[in-house]
Amino acid sequence: MTPSRLFGLLSPAEFLSAYWQKRPLLVRGAVPDLGEPIDPDSLAGLACEPDVESRLVVADRRASRWTVEDGPLPPERFAELPDRDWTLLVQAVDHWVPAVSDLIDRFRFLPNWRLDDVMVSYAVDGGGVGPHFDSYDVFLMQGRGQRRWLVGDPCDETTPLLSHDRLRLLRDMTVREDHLLDPGDMLYLPPGLAHDGIAVGDCVTYSIGFRAPGVAEALAGMADLAAERHGDSARYRDPDLTLQDNPGEIAPAALDRLRSMMLTVLDDADLLAEWLGRWSTEPKVPEAVEAPDMRIDAASLGALFDSGVALHRNNGSRIAFVDRGGGSVLLFVDGEPQVCAGRTADLARLLASETRLPAARLGRFMADPAGARLLVTLVNAGALYTE
Ligand code: SIN
Ligand code: CO
Image (cartoon, rainbow, N blue to C red; front, side):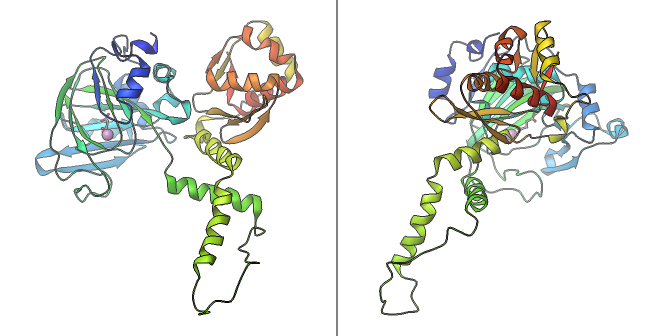
């Protein structure tokens, strides 16, 4: 299925201009061929694994009480659960289950670096995490069963919350929209909108989650990079100092000097590109990116391509690039930057845009030592694998 059918009659470009980060959108039959990329038993199995992030949320809606248990869960926990009012949420299922990772392909019209993960939840009748808001965009795709989604008003840090140490539950939620989703339906929610998803019978929901750096986080990251680059050498200077009336005053001119020195650091486009590239490609689950037991060399990799073996991106690996102009790019793989020029820059662009590369598209890059080196390095790091 092509991404263009994801929003029914709306094109991805129309979705971006009218809904993305602005308003919710319900699409009936958005993903009619969704099937069951993971079944509830396998999901429960994942929640018992130590490298997988999961939560079990048990609700007592009448008492407005929700309890959260973090994974890994002991397998016997599932046998003790009641018939209703609980949900199991498993984060980054795309890292572990290729069929779940394939769901992301429908969203490749959005910049990859904005994508976070696919969370999968299984809930029994009445189960859900309660009325809340999230900081990020999300596409909620309905798998098996039905879920009722209540959508409320925009919220922010001043919105009153229930005192709950784990879930940011809303004290009140005025319901503006009420939708019962069937398998294959999809609801898009922009950041900050109140919502509450309640299972109607048992159901599975796939949440394609996005992320965006906080400005404070970006500033802190830039400060760390600047400290690495400049150390103590960049320091407040005042060769233009003149006499001031009160030596006890921190004068406006002093503040201006420091401000302008800080803005010079912040205005460094290369530094910002490096920070965002590193930040956005840092693996979410480092355990999912393992170096292979056997290292490969250029000759063996070339031979594999010659025999038609394709290259795949590890589902836990993240690749992005920044164009530096003049035909060179800064390629980021799992948080590590490297400059690629000439034909290797073409290879870098290809690696960042595709998650599967047939051998026929790779042969020409192996003829070039820099291209071959890049591919061999990434295969040996576990970011790419042959199959
Ligand atoms: C879910 O229960 O699958 C989604 C939870 C949410 O609303 O964030
Ligand atoms: Co939510």
